[in-house]
Length: 359
Image: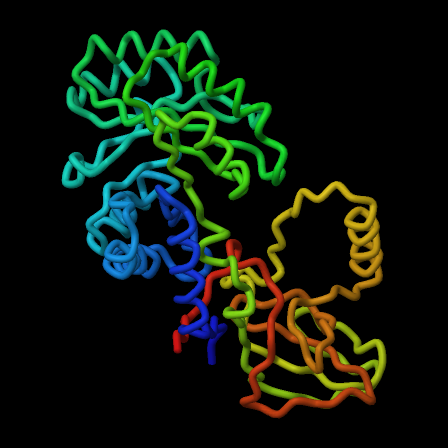
């Protein structure tokens, strides 16, 4: 049995349509594990969105571009949708260019030397110049953006605009964006498209109203694919159930049961990302206290799993196996039957499902 993502198809599709309709210039992002759905599946959905929504909107750009994270992800989406493909990771001279899709690729450029090197390899390359933000990850500073714009005007590359990759903090970007837009205006790239990430609908509306002569293209992944969590239900299958007495040995490491109860073996293990928790980055007191509490459980050999039985996250009996996990149910708990499906609370972007069941 498998770790499965059950999707309420009607509800999920309605969410995708609503998001696309209210987001002019939308650029869907399909990267990494495809937000749990897989890259190929999301690419097909972008093609579906374009066919569904274009007749209902005056925005001809819907579905014309998809964003991927890296060049290695290009092949997975290229054969499944007709859109141009913007690669979010900046191109570097040591990255081989996918020749078969060269006319569809839009390269992100964040260094002057990369712009010149790319122009030598592909004189007619399509590029987006990335302006560095407070993320301080990639991109030109203000002077570098101006220099790159001047260099691009002397080359035959096709500049598709300027990109901002902003921090995740919602609703707090307008002052920074206004400063960045000043740099874009000074770079004198016209007509100009601005590709943005992590702006709220209100911020996008303000940006469009303030800079009406610019085309704004929001790159959206999580909010598009995972924005209606009620339509998505990760499920695992109960594979085996064993009663166990206190002191009995079990598992790979011959642990002794701390008390009587049941061992429940369920589908889903490290191969799926179970037990490989990614840091959340939360800074609140509550989140720090929760981390301390989890650390205490770890020290005592009691680790809370993401598997839920009767609405409670049950403890791992031992570290998860590659494709299955062992849970401990104390005496008095309802014991599920072999073949039952149980819910799993997990991060979609860090999980590989065996199957997606779309109704």
